[in-house]
Amino acid sequence: MAKILVNDGISEQGAQILRDAGHELQMTKVEQDDLINELKNYDAILVRSATKVRTEHIDASPGLKLVGRGGVGLDNIDVDYAKTKGIEIVNTPAASSDSVAELVLMHMFNLARWGHASNVTLRKGEWNKKKYKGVELSGRTLGIIGFGRIGQSLGRKAVALGMKVVAYDVVDVAVDYDATITKSMDEVLGAADFVSVHVPNKNFLEMTSEHFNKMKDGAYIINCARGGVLKEDDLLTALNSGKLAGAGLDCYDNEPKPNPDLLNHANVSATPHIGAATVDAQGRVGLELATKVSNFFAGKGAVA
Image (tube, rainbow, N blue to C red; front, side):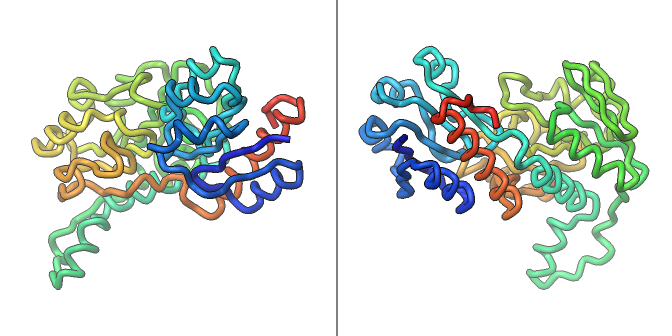
């Protein structure tokens, strides 16, 4: 059976699946600087977003057979290099979709009704009842860039709120609710009052001033995907000029210390990368990840 370093935590249900399969778990976190010396002692490592598994860690760990990511994005793992060494890479793309979609909606509500700003000023003793004039989501158009599991979950919830949904993806997608799906990103940008971006990383898309300028004046943009998919300097320019009315951000270039000009901007609703941080999602993440890892070491393949 495998010796597994669970470096960023896993749900108890997931841990129990691995223990029941006979695997030995090390649950005490190894700090990033020490990982290069410690990883060689394990057959597998399970991470979330905090731990990075890079080329140097792979080279120093000839016995490593699997890297598992509890979540969707894999930009903290040198995936291509790992595969050249025969290392299996698994993640959990389905488990957190609803949680991330709900966080996007939270940011949309915050921006539409000034929830982020009015909460702070009220706590400071300011009664700005007439200052915060909002808009309704119902009847407005949500543009979704990247119409995979999370984008589709978001679209379904937005339709239930009375929004129109127009979505962009490079592949053919079909859903069981009313949505316009196109392969023209410009069509989405031009039509949407709110735009939510759902791509794996900035290698797929980095939105710059060129994209923001194609959006409606006074539109809003949400990034609960990955840091880097919005060029932050260009975003600040669009916010400061009034081209964009607001931004909802859960992911940043420089985590865990994002640009303070963004965090403190009056028109930014900000959270600290908590898209999948619900009890529900983490339970599903742990189960999905543990099942894939167990299947792999049992010779059944990683896919559950």
